[in-house]
Image (cartoon, rainbow, N blue to C red; front, side, top):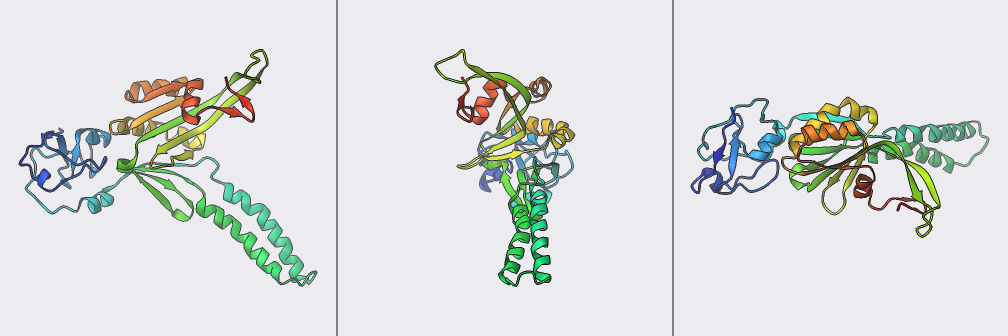
Length: 287
């Protein structure tokens, strides 16, 4: 059973200037909070729902605010974070694809040098530079996404991760278009001249964080494999953040309507315009 506590003016939580671990909001008098029975962290009701009414791998909550203690919340929170799900990025094999031609070229140059066909020593430097290209690609390439209780991690090469705390995000946008045909005007003034294009996008997440949003395109296979977890994640996070869906997938839209009631759903071109702005195909204007 979840115990909801209304914060009074003399509450130890106010004296400790406690913050909600998910949103980062300072807990104020009159707020309703839920306190994890295990670690004693205080969550606003919306954040507790986002966590699925579970923390520290248990669901017990306290019925009253514990006596003042010197909690190290940030440190404890990092230790207690649980991975909700992990998915791979679309096009995550670019480094491997790059390695093939650079490897072939490096091999040919090396054979020429070994056979003394050429004595240009600096070519060894070229070989070293070419062989390092795939490693450089791998280091900076986005590999996927990992979602935890309080943060979203964008996975990079060599196990590196970029952490995006949920408390720092303004909203999360998600788009997925299986592909549909649409007639566009070849000329803004002559409506009779049209061309038909097929519009499709991979499952793409956009995190609105800071000045520049972060885009992550996932493989359709990994999205479908984690589909239920994605829906559950969007359902939970809609309690603390704005969630927007742009799609032409009626089944996906229906799932969002049923399980993510707080999400804003935009279909077909309305969704594309929202996610990408005005859509241009080379110099062709989408009317």
